[in-house]
Image (tube, rainbow, N blue to C red; front, side, top):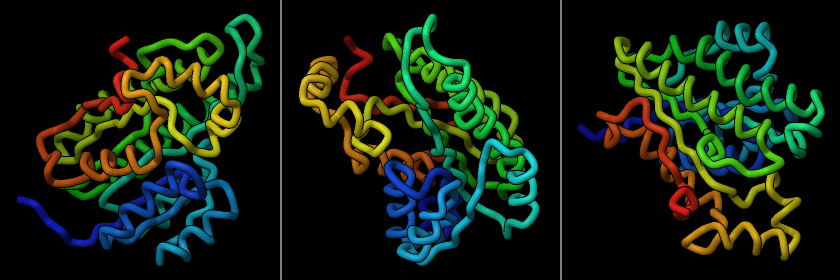
Length: 239
């Protein structure tokens, strides 16, 4: 059965980029969005979407636990917040860069699943934002890609563990997306052409290419999908 009943949707990393686009898509559907981010800017986003702002460091266990204890209950959780932190070969990337990516992308996702995921009512859904980098290596991004492989693993485990609660857990795994996170290399014409040459469809994704997939996985139409990591890469994994 397909329902259009408004839901309460928590989106992390909602202050900008992909998270903001996802939050806007849910709000446009008529859902109440809880926009979560470490940045003060999340308050403006929540106001624009007539939602609720939640300023939160998802890598802080006490903060996440406190936020979950104070929460009025959610139907959908989107674990979008993520960082790259920098780049470099495995021989050169700094421990600080690796640790920053690990704390947000892996520990943060784990904490949100643990503290919020198990409180979602039956029939709810979780969508994690992964990356095709979990399956296709790019030199200089190994530290980031390792975190996204961990996100895929957490997605599968949570799908098994939450199935008895009738809560589905899936992931969307984009290739590069035009957001502030990728602005550094997409602003360089040569770097952008080099990356687009890896994509059979010939272009880097826009936020509007990804948000509908998150909406789908959170919807009743995906009611028999759980533990899936859905690639959205313009065919990059094919080459």
